Image 1 (tube, rainbow, N blue to C red):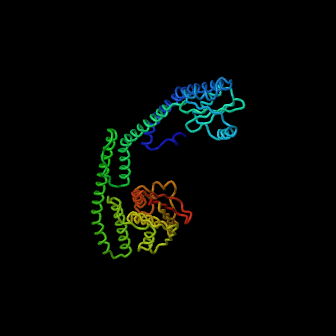
Image 2 (cartoon, rainbow, N blue to C red):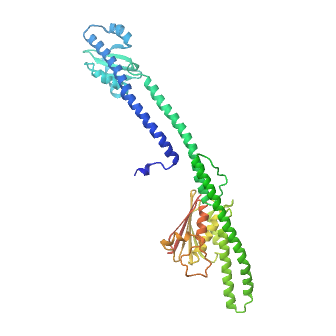
Image 3 (cartoon, one colour):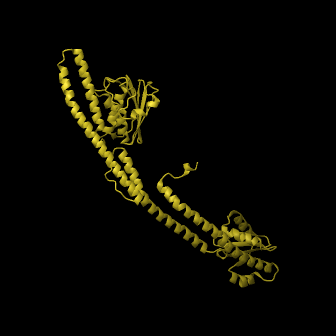
Length: 435
């Protein structure tokens, strides 16, 4: 359950490891500060002002001192202004007091005043001042004093220092962590590109010692794989060259056979061997299949359908959506041709459904053949794999069609899936290519 909500990126995880303890530590400091210092300071300052107001109100109620003398003797020293207000002012200020929300400082002062002053009263926050309304019988007193008397500005300085210093430390940590994780990200991208068959010659070893060691081992592995592929290609090219010469001689010798049936059979076998040999050689080529030519996928499929190799085949095309997009011509054409050749090995009818959008190209190829069992659908993408090795040995199928197609699509981040066709009852091949 917890893993679903944890960050997946290494950078985010590393930042969380650094930032979360820092945030928790700062929250503890701020909480302790508010509980042990700020609230106590505000409470003591509020209690002092509340006692001054209570003393002044009691003396005025007992006629020990007049309003004028209270302003002169007490107001000048305590920074308070004492005034008797009318009933109209009282009603207006009472309505305003009920509407306006009391802030933290004013609320704390109100609690202290309630425990000190016995007379009926209420407290009102007015910008930078606090108004206290006290009922003294037939009259109402309004005592006004600055809010700074019951609060301290140091708390804002402390909070600002905590927030700014934390933000600076988090920003510095982010910069350092990003530079440390960047080589790992580059190594992952290089491995992904190499896995698609692309060149990664611009990859440079950098980062910490452990990351540099992994990058060096990756380059060694890449060079070994490239060397092995080159050796395989050279071997197959040599074998192909050596076999083409005796096949050509056999073809010439077959032309001299007088028995037409035997002659036709032998020429057909030589033709099949040549086609299989060319397919092996094409599979072993290490050429850059990503050319610069682009083509609209729908136009490409229509052109393939009208090609001389498929113009006599039963192919239906259904276009769901036609967006103005272009794909790599070489890769897309070769993939569709391989899939069509694979379908017509065991089917008589094929239906192609294509849907293009600015984000994705979807192509489904349905046929009326026997299909492929679900247990065999993963195996058919293996090179040289045949479902039934005991039959159709005269077929030119070498088991490379689907493997080559998957390799081509992987090079452009495309995917291929096999399933059961509900339209024609045979095999359904679905490919998706991001635009």
